[in-house]
Image (cartoon, rainbow, N blue to C red; front, top):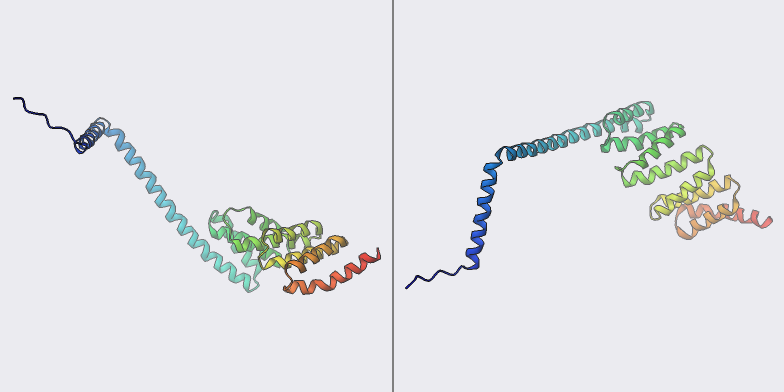
Length: 229
């Protein structure tokens, strides 16, 4: 009587497939050992380069922050020339770091403090073009752009820049001041309807702010002038 063949189970089939896979993989490795060795070396080189790059970037960031701290101390003490030299050193040597980003904004701040509004404007605008920037500095840089434009007597552009701050950051502490400053610029342009609208918007949006209180008197004066025309 012939011996009855054992029926294969799913487990047996699965184990056979695994065995076949490893057998095929072993044969491929034997036939392509040089190619696989080259791939492995390539992968190791890439990993090594990435590791070194990360370490160098971390070291550069640390050095940049150290230089930034010294320049900030000079800025706080009113040594603007030394502060600007320190920031420029960071800008030239540490591109792509947070130190470079912060130095760009602070260069604008230092130039504004010394009345170099054209240079300050360039730095503030450059900061806003960076991908790596801090949210708090971003709003300040936008206000810086508006303030530079106002100091340069470009009142129409300044007013629009102030209004942009309020539109994009309505909950920011700078927002009421941005509206007040926009109204002031319109007044300097003798554009009384726009000044009136800005003061009203300020009072409606931020009724408890200090700027809203300050806006009430000039608003009354503007309305009185508009009634005469």
